[in-house]
Image (tube, rainbow, N blue to C red; front, side, top):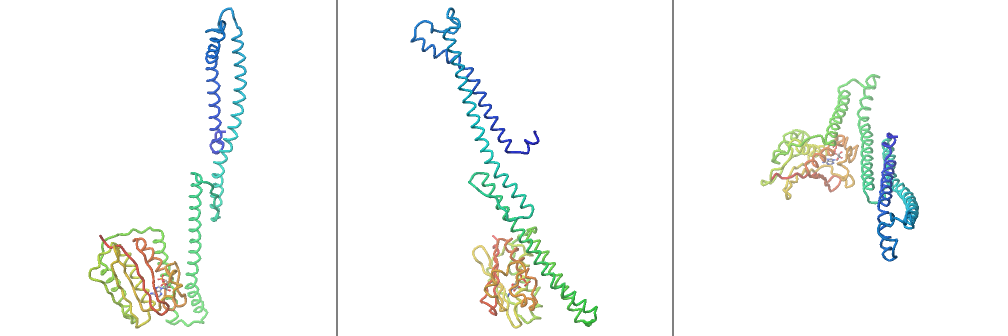
Amino acid sequence: MIAYLRRHLGIKLFLSYLIVILVGVVILASTTQFALPGAFERHMLRMGAGMGPGMGPGMMNAPGSGLGQAEELYLNFRASFNEALALAVFVSAALALVVSMIFSRGVIAPVQDMMSVSQRIAEGHYNERVQVRGEDELSQLARCFNTMAGQLEQIETMRRQLIGDVAHELRTPLTAIKGSMEGLMDGVLPATDETFGQIYQEADRLSHLVDDLQELSRVEADTFKLDLRPVAVMDLVNSALGRLSRQYEEKGVTLTSSLPADLPLVQVDEDRVGQVLLNLVGNALQYTPAGGNVQISAVRDGDEVRIMVTDTGIGLPAEHIPHIFDRFYRADKSRSRRAGGGSGIGLTIARYLVEAHGGRIWAESEGEGQGSRFTFTVKAAK
Ligand code: ADP
């Protein structure tokens, strides 16, 4: 019985209402029984003052009159009063019980609704929502519950999409490696340096992809700590130039920088922002044909500094610009692969890192063949 009570909020509520009603009834009955004789005598006295002898003080015990008229009157009055009281108690208690049942249901129904919906969500039906009625705390709880369910649904969609995307990305190099190995085993492909070179390239692509995925999961999970310090933009730029200038020379693309002398220090994690800049300068090299130019520049903008990487490369069609920071998005898959492009994760990681610094990152391009400009903002050091 107690265990049953513990498990049912509705019964608990109902019992609490019942106890309040019973306490009310007991207090009503005992107060009236206690107060009735005194009140009766007082009123009779007042009447007696106007009715002459026999109706004076102590009339109910008055000798001679015995259990006279007054006492009989009192007993009859008490009996009729008790009868009326019993009826009133019965009717009001019955009504109170009905009302309390309705109220208990009003509280229990939304809770039960949330319970069954949460069970459905746990079973994988992420599109389930509870009905929200009214503005009280229970309705607010239902609203919060729906928000939580919406977020769970979004995470689940992203998870499914990620698994699909990763499987798709892994399949391409794996199929190429498998095909080449089968060709080698069947003797269809010659065991030359070229064949081994192709297999190596695909394996290399796989290993880059896995590294990128690991980095992506780290930045998406927000598990990295930023070591914010005042850093000179010049140091960031020099570090990117140092790491990529040889590759620029090899491809025949010019890499220059232009920084105003009064540029303030920026408050950043040097390694992380260096990684963003390296990614943008690396992309610019990848998507700029030989003979082109890439320039790194920066300007102060209020309490921020804008860092820009501008190239004269293949450019970006307008319809792709809003998506290139999305995971696995490539403006043109075949073009990107031909141009030695990667997995389409680099800009996603860059966006996470810039946003973790409280900055923004965006791309601009006049269109295909017109070059592109990637800009990100960071806070100036105080
Ligand atoms: P990827 O590893 O494929 O380069 P990114 O996330 O770095 O992936 O870039 C996403 C896509 O954005 C690229 O596939 C490419 O289509 C486009 N892109 C990036 N940088 C440039 C650029 N400088 N010029 C033209 N297109 C670019």
